Length: 377
Ligand SMILES: *[C@@H]1O[C@H](CO)[C@@H](O)[C@H](O)[C@H]1NC(C)=O
Ligand SMILES: *[C@@H]1O[C@H](CO)[C@@H](O)[C@H](O)[C@H]1NC(C)=O
Picture 1 (cartoon, helix red, strand yellow):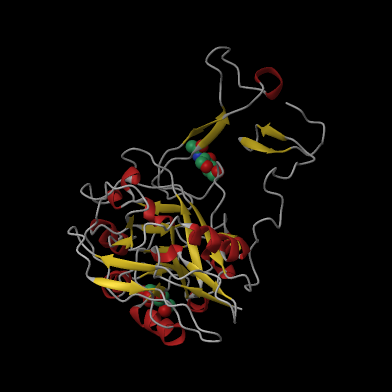
Picture 2: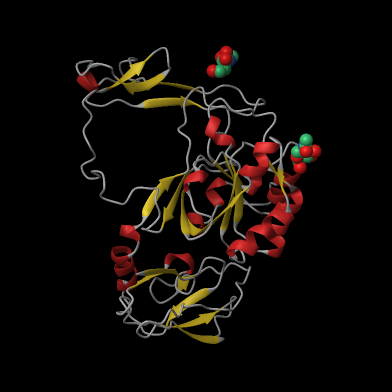
C-alpha cells in the first residue's frame, strides 16, 4: 500500500490512499481558475494510477496571492487555500470522495500532539506576568461552582498575555495592518508539515540559529519544501520543558525565515522556544509578522514527527482583536509511522472514565486528578 499526499484537490485536504492494484477514489474533473474573474484557465484532471503505477495527481498552476471571497454556496465553488478557487465541473459531486478519503486514509493515520499543556507555572517570556487559574464563582451564591451543589464546575483564568504556551502568532502582534486572531483564515486548519531537524547542531551550540544552508541541506535529502506548507524547526529545546532556558535558546535566523517565505512560499514556520531569535529587536519574528506572515512558537514533540509526509492540524481560538493564539497543533502522520495514536485506539465517545475524580488543588492552583478514588468535591 502506498500513501500519496496530493495537493490537487482542496489543497492539502485531499489524500488518496491507493491500494497497489485498485483505485479507491473516484476520478473527478475540475476546472481551476485563479483571481477574481473566475475565468476558466486550465482544465485539471486528477489522474488515478493504472494498475501498479504510481502516478501522483498534481496541479502546477501557482497559487494566486489574492484572496477570493465567494458568495456562492458549496459545492458549486470551493475556495482553495492560497486563494485559487476550484470549481467542480460536475454538479453531481456531493463531496463523497472526501468522506471516502477520511475512511480510507485519515481515520487510519497516527495523530501526534505537538502542544504544551497550559499550567499556572508555564514558562513565559519574562516581560509578561504570571497567569492564574481559579474555580469559577457563581454570581448568584458567590461560591465556587461544585458538582454536588451546582451539578457542574467551571474554571476562571487570569491570563496576562495572549503570547503564551504553544502559539500561533497573528501578524497583528507586530503590525496593526495585518490579521488579528479573529481575522486568521480558517484555511490554516490543515496543511502539509515539514520538520527540519537542527538538534545535532544545538547539542554543540545551545543558541545555534537555523541557516539557509541548513534548509538547502534538508532539501538535498528530502526534496523541495512544498509551497504553502508549514515548516517546524526541531531543536529539542522543549524536551527540558518546563525547566527551559527562555533567555538562551536555539534560534531561527532572519535569513532562514526570509528564505522560507520568499523563496519557498511557505505558510508559516514554527519553533520550539518562545521566540524565533535572541536579537534585541526580535529580528526574525518582527520581519515575518510585519510582512503579514504568521509564526508558531512553543511547539513540542517534534522528535516524534518525520521530516516529511505528515499533515498539520491547527486548532486556534478566535478572540476579537487578539494578536496571539493559544493553539493545539496535531501532526497527522502516515499509518506506518512508529509514533502517534490511531483514531479509535483509545475510547473517544464516550471518553474513558477515570478511577480518581478531578479535584481543585489549592497548592497547584488548578484542578488535578485526586490521589484517592473517593475525593469528591
Ligand atoms: C510567578 O511564577 C513563578 C514561577 O511559578 C514564581 O516563582 C513567582 O513567585 C511568581 N510571581 C508572582 C508575583 O506570583
Ligand atoms: C552559536 O550559534 C550562534 C548563532 O548562529 C552564533 O552566533 C554563535 O557564535 C555560536 N556559538 C559558538 C560557540 O559557535
